[in-house]
Length: 80
Image 1 (cartoon, rainbow, N blue to C red):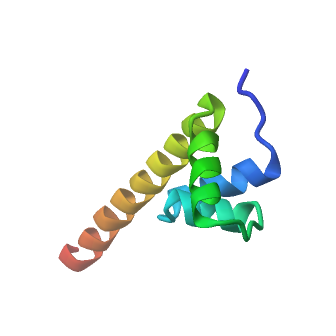
Image 2: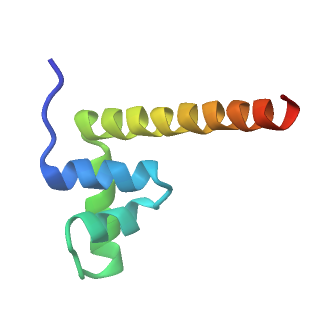
């Protein structure tokens, strides 16, 4: 059974999959205004959690597949 992420962890993963860097994703998901070094450290620590890194990877893979499907569909429209 997949471990459940907190809503903030899920948001962090969605932002990562959307192309944000770890620090930016952490700041937005956790509404953090901390020092850059602290945010970087916390974001790195969060990404090291197996459930978080696995979810980020899964969301990124889903996004990539959607992009590929869209590219194929666009080509079919142009060719067809």
